[in-house]
Length: 477
Image (cartoon, rainbow, N blue to C red; front, side, top):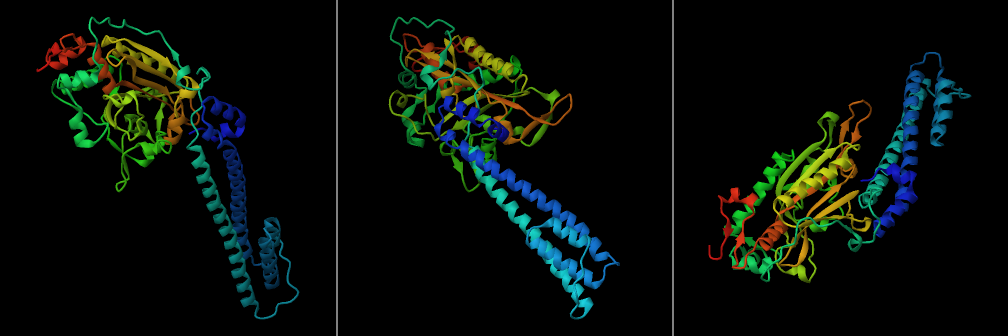
């Protein structure tokens, strides 16, 4: 979530950034946000004034009731004057009436009973003042809820270094690393190669769960499991990440805290009776590990890595994405996550991208870095890089990693702060996330790049220790 002060102080700048992000729906909300914020602040001022006045009146009321110098006529007169003033919302006049009460001309009835009645009527007027404050409080809550409804839909602002562009066609593609293999045969796509090796079963996956589900089996499952273990080992032993094994279901607050809700709510699987949601990414759980906590600056940066299944209901487009396991409802990722200070977060982003690049390099598969333009930045990211591996059978570059600096956008929602070593108020941390790597597409890249003319697939050197030294997956194995 953005700092409301940013929108309040620089609304036109925010609008320009939203235009750069190509987010017209969010842009349409800014004027409403500014108006609601103005109303909220005005009402808060009113509430504060009423509560301060009520406190003053309560103190003076005690003095007024305990005074032994005021006559019954003064008490009745002062109470009547204060009540009239309160009914007209003139607190200053009410204070004056209780401080210097003017007597009524004559008391008609028992003085003691008249004084008692005056105190009761004054107490009722004071209670009504409190009720007015409560009513305003409720109005403030309603305005704040409406304000938050808008704020939750406004994306993070892009970093000044992000290139301005309308969509993914304008992303900046870095020079690929690694040579594209020159095959002496026509390489197969994984949707043919996998079934031929009996390691991917599309039909049974669909039979069990429906479209966009699959089944990895035999040596394919072993390779898949070995890739996960290898990635976790590399990131923990070489890159300094701490492994986390989180719950795969989270509360709604965690979805809001990680900026998945409300924007992507339609894309998740849920147990609505239990009010739990299946992870669309481990990022959700990792963001909320430190929700509502204040960390010490000396603890930062925190580097976490987590392997989880991910579940997404997103609608799939027709076309080439229909075939294979590139775009499915259930997949796995080894997720990298960081909590950092604002001063170091962009250095941490670069080191995260390099960690993901390193595993691509160790697999000896051609890859390239993509620098995202504003129009393809996503919702929570202030700056983002993707990594793509070459898939020669599918004849396309596959996104296997997306690394983002979300600055304080998620931390503000999840309320994750740190206490500066130099002192001062706690500040929001910066959060970063990235795939290290996405498993399904990495499996595609391994199968298609390491396939042989005889239909076998050679096991990459780094994965052989996780396959008991197996060098290749052979047809009929």
